[in-house]
Image 1 (cartoon, rainbow, N blue to C red):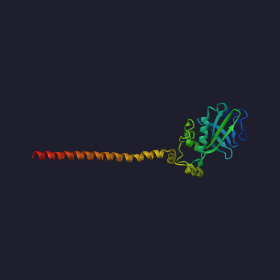
Image 2 (image 1 turned 180 degrees about the vertical axis):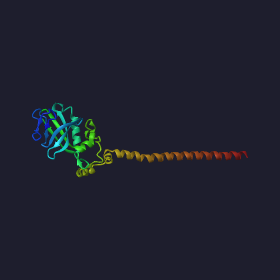
Image 3 (image 1 turned 135 degrees about the vertical axis):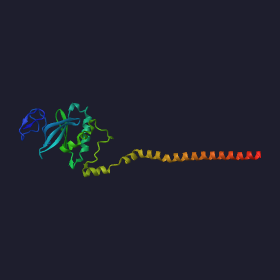
Image 4 (image 1 turned 45 degrees about the vertical axis):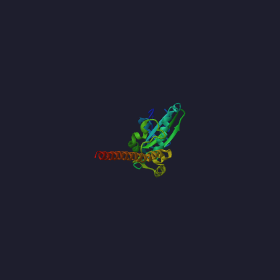
Length: 222
């Protein structure tokens, strides 16, 4: 027996509608993902234990439901969803894709954003899937690292073509400024050495003058 996760209306397992006839809650999404039971509520949305109807395997579906009247105030949530979807789209965990599907469904009163995760990857990555749970990262803010993950070959090739941080600094003038500062250091050191050498010469000359004066004074005494 299938039970609607919202209103708990019961359906025969092979007669589950796309939307619950009683509460209108979506039950089957993209004609493939059948929502079963809630797992947890987080800053990225509500997670559900879900069945892939095509393979009968368990996956995790995340639903970010935003009322149309709240869209203006929740742009940071939408931006976080889009950033996460882009970042996780090419990521693999233990050879399996982390993000299996992502899509948006609009209703009369709400806009729902969905992500479908491999269940094992979802359990292993945990809070990393939330991007820390705060507001969406700024354009220049680093996303959580993906070192140690297996990337799709195409994504890896694209990342390899991106400029390194050193190249970015050169473009922004960062390295030039550093080089200018470094170039001045030897000059400064050389100047300090010249001052020290001149001081030594002055001291040497002064000592020599004193010695000569002493010798002359001794001659006059004799």
